[in-house]
Length: 314
Image (cartoon, rainbow, N blue to C red; front, side):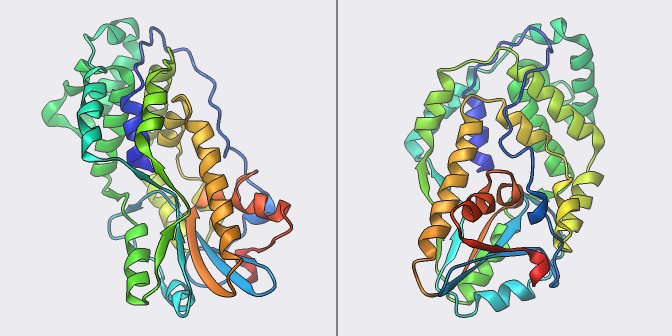
C-alpha cells in the first residue's frame, strides 16, 4: 500500500506557491471507542467476526515496526492451526512496463528551487531535517518540488529509525506457510489507472502542506513511533493508535487517495463477508486504524448485523 501511494505521489505535479494549510479529507480520523479495547490475551489485539458456523480472527497491524521489535506470536500460531484461509489487505500490481512512465513522472517533480525562496521558513526547517537524516547530501532536497521532498524525507527518516515496512506482514506470512494456510488478498487492483488519475489533477497547496506534515513527524523523532509499536505489541490499542500519522496525512492530500482508502475498507469488508460463507475458522489482518475507524471495517460489519467481538473478550 505504501509503495503504491508513493507511486501515486510521484505523479502529482504540485506547484505550491505558499504554505497555506490545505484541508485534509481523512476518512479514518475518528475511531469507534467501543472497538478500541486492550487485549486480554498476550501479544497484539485481535477482534472476532462470526456468524452461525464461521469465526474469523482479525488482527490489526501497524504500517511498520522498528527493527528488532519483539511481539508475542503465540495467539497467531494457535489461530492459524486448522484455519482454512489467511485474508490479507488488498494488493496493487504494477508491471515492468510501468516503470518508464513512473520515472517520467518522478522527473516531472524536479524543481529550480523557487518554492524555497517563496517559503523561507519551511525551507529552513527542511534543510535542518534533511541534514539530520542525510548529512552527506545535505542539499539533496533543493532540486525537487515539495511533495517529492516530503516523500524522500519520510523515507530517509524511517530508514534512520530502522523502521521496517515489511513487518509484521512478513512474520505473519512466514507462520502461515509453516502452518500450510493459504494466503489470499481481499482484492487485487492495477496501480497504473489510479496513478494516471492522480496525474490529471494538480493540487496547488498540497506539496507544501504535505511537507509541513512530514516535517512535524520527522522533528518529533522516532520515540513516538517506537512507543506506538511497543503499545501495539502489548495489545494496548488506544496507545498504538496514538502514533504519528504525518506520512499518512501527507498521502491523503493527493487527489483520490481518501476515496482509495474508503475503497480498501470496502474491499476488506467484502473479503471478510465472503469468508463467512465457509464453515470453520479463518485468520485475517488489516491496518489497525482501518479496522476500528468510524465507517471502518468492523463498524461496517456491525451495521450488516454481523457479530464483532473485541480484544477484551479474549
